[in-house]
Length: 244
Image (cartoon, rainbow, N blue to C red):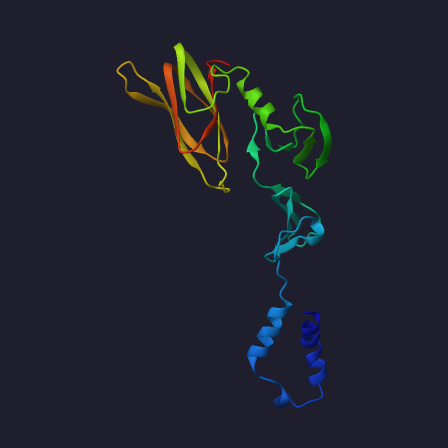
């Protein structure tokens, strides 16, 4: 492959003393030689050294795989060569302000600080002026779910249906769904419904889920039987008492 590239680069030098009519005007051999020079990734790069460069003339980026998840590091913008930041996919929403997480790594946005919880901090890294990356010694999802469920009337139950022993009043919904095929910008609609005295169902909250974890406040509702309509497996379903 290198010899083909070298031959292409040296060809103008060899032809410099020859009449222009002697040059090969056939485009096909040149196109095949250019194809030989294309860099093709047949497997994902695992480190920044074997990352794939991307760019559009304004923004440049290197892309590689970190622990089976894509990492995009922006390396330049509008002529600047400084590192701007890092974008990590497949993160989940967190119950802590301005935070998302993936496995045992928490990303704090907006220049904030890491929240206090039982996990031990292994390392911290400032990715940019507004994003802090914190690595812990254990997965964060169980801690996030426990934090959400601390004041829950349903104690983090799974499944889309709640049957209380008596009517309860609540004004906040938190739930987690399985959404393995999620892509940025895609949503799943949902409705929170309560059963009326006549057996009919009334929608008290609705919206769109981005990713896997959702939280919403709404006007207080009182009901004994509640259901969550969403086209996904519900892993966690919490209703919080009014005023909590």
